[in-house]
Length: 467
Image 1 (cartoon, rainbow, N blue to C red):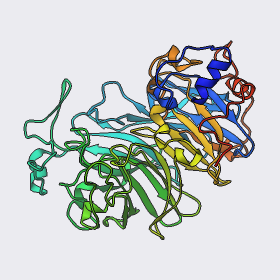
Image 2: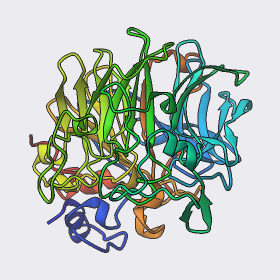
Image 3: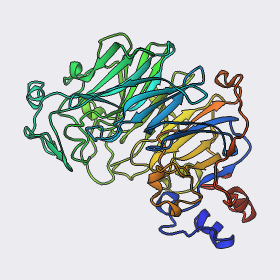
Image 4: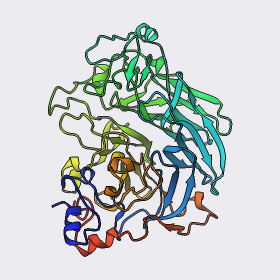
């Protein structure tokens, strides 16, 4: 029997459960902090509920120590080196609706005052999307979809009649909107405080069939029609390594991670995940056959202190089965040197799965903070030996209300968090700041789920005391 089913069978049945008992993600259950064990990396966790107006900083016990409010919903947020919050906010009606579109960067000081904003949306021309990187000089490295015409795509070598390819001269119909042309990605550095563009790398300038180029006729089969059409490259995460002057990017739709030179207009230096894209490997070939493809819908690259790259391998359309894993890739070894998936803690791999978004952060003590976005921002902290020592399910809804259980709100996917971030307790960002508990995160009267789990001898997700 699933751990949560045991809790509610043995305890007070404080909320009604419904659905499958195979995975937390498949049914309704308690929210908030569910588990805390010895071995955590002590600090504060930034939780930015998507489409909500409030961003939270919580302590290790799930209490709110600080929060920021905006007039807009959020896609993703992180802290600046001075402790200010920078968030990628979603402008109302921003198009095209590929998923991840946002269009506005906002910076708030510790007191909640907006001190800067940058609008990165030109209707029917370009829009910023997904995550960003705060660079050492304070500038922002962002991702932008930029429109090119159907005729321009043909001139670049597009074969519109390729099997499974959906790009139409008359435009692509998505609901009530018509998306014209093709929208490949631009990586852009904008100057903090002014929004001036100081550097960019444009996919459009690197189209070709070589190993250092991106083939306009390549895409992962079995994807949504829009992803095999105007939303072709769908970059979704960008990270800068100041030690090597390199940038890492993930492409969901091409199932790869790329490394390029910063301040260079050169091509791709390194790529990993789907060698069939450039004729160096076998593509998947039906049920159960992954071919040589290693990544399936990857997200959220980040450089570690060791020079490796953390990647969330979502696993969407993986022929051998849909499951999500956190991966640590060493480009020098061209190999995965660490990974975590649900079967590492004695459960089935599909018990931890998010088809889109999600992220993994390697913490200074070697632990990992892993977030499954569409499972209610299901965030776990994992030891290097794979055991889970901290677990949190986001209770903050898109309506800015806090819920005790997901059945009180609806689909747990409505509680999504792109990627939670942990900051050390002694981080300079918090120097001189009031870090006391401001209020409990959960509503009054919410059961202490941790105590219920302990009383009923039910371990946290995936039985973390076992390897």
